[in-house]
Length: 402
Image 1: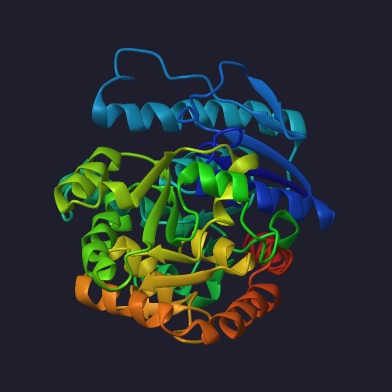
Image 2: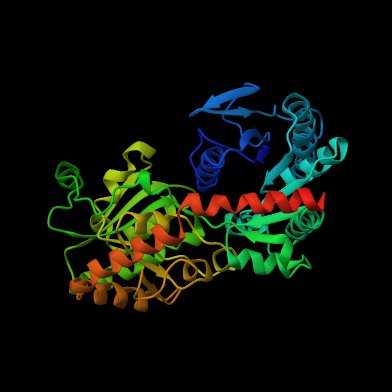
């Protein structure tokens, strides 16, 4: 079966979106599918029409041109028009059996248009509600015109696609709540490739010395610094933790829109010397920083996005035998069983976060059993091979509906 994946962006860019895509493509190929891949004009990292990355061939869509291409609202339609045109060219060349469009809804709209031209079935994959992400990024207002328009467009795609997939139960419930048949919506959860992660490794002592972490207890976060991640909450809890455990340090690896705010928070709280900002690290070196951390902390605030969507980073930490403490938002509760595979604290509660950290540090005898339970959960329920196998049934459903 020949599957044409329609994507917002892809590797070589690094994001949770591109890593999930790569894992899906690799596993589908291992299952015997022929996969082909096209990105929209929102992938701005390439100016060629065809590009090979890590053994995967990507068709690229040129940037839209014309008087309307730079106008905020009209640009979205220009992206759809350009993608549909390029997608038609690719369909003519490769003759796929199925169009598999991935979030955002713009990709689904282009796929539906081209599917009519060539009488092809469409599978649409919702990875998050982009209107909620836009609210967090400050580019949209919940309930505003742009928010409602984005939501309506995606609901339109849900209704007309032959099958719908999503990444977690929270999103599935929301999609069904829009009037979509439950039988039409399949969860293909985020997962990990265990071969890419080392389990329970000792820290690199030279790096530990370089970071000033010798003899320290390390709380860590590796990822993008978005507002919803709640990193200022972690720093606000740090003075209370230091009163009892002065050897605790916080290691922050990554960057993003909130980086300056997070650094300013550390200065204002007087904990700048206890917080190590590493910046962004290349993917091939990130394992060395994972190995430095005793407890990974994911203090996400409660909002629609975090209540509905499961993150990938806690799974990666659990796969490596790292301890995980996270806020009790819905997305985390789908991944973490409190006191079994990790710990949960009340979202937004600085005191509860500080107390949970101190309680964990006072019970080191509980660490190893929990590490092993978390690793077994990933091995048995959250490997990409298991997740991606479910696409076989989804594609069959889409072909039957078509």
